[in-house]
Length: 219
Ligand code: DC
Image 1 (cartoon, rainbow, N blue to C red):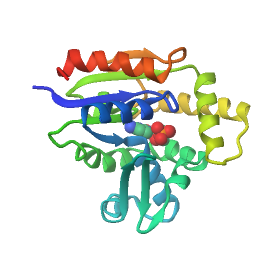
Image 2: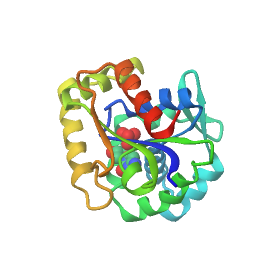
Image 3: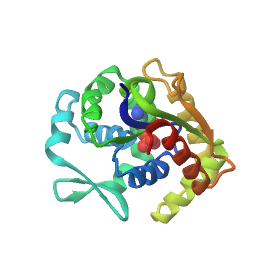
């Protein structure tokens, strides 16, 4: 029996987050943004916490809230969403996520997001390592240029200064790092369905995915 889980893996800014949020709302499933967990981990490590203390700190002090604005993260009473979404934290997360210790520490925490109602989990290794028994596995890709443009608009909306060429270069380098690392490299699971969203709107990707959920989850 497969688990009531949809995994959406792929490189950064391929549209995984928007697809995951929309599909989760459509099916009334819970949601796991695993990239954000890696960002929280990197942020806490950079603020001086040791590897062995981070998961306990996340369980005790980090609050994940989903509302109409999307996902926000609070540490105690402080909203740290902006800090987590910065390119600085993205780089730190990319670096720390290649360590065995980090991946082991976060494994059970990620699996704990699945309770019977169903889960949409997005990241890099959701279908290959964390939820190999998922009913539907999607691998979402888009060209580096398209992804850089999306990230540019996203960062600009948040009032952050960005340089388009530097962004394309950053994305290519992070892809290479994520794809070639030894542990949990960014590769499609054998039983995943690859969607290239370079020339597709979110609505098109969404309606295609809804057809897949009907077929694979009967929903
Ligand atoms: O999706 P994102 O950009 O928020 O992810 C931040 C970093 O975390 C990314 O460089 C790779 C890492 N990551 C990972 O190694 N495994 C995951 N399942 C999710 C993210």
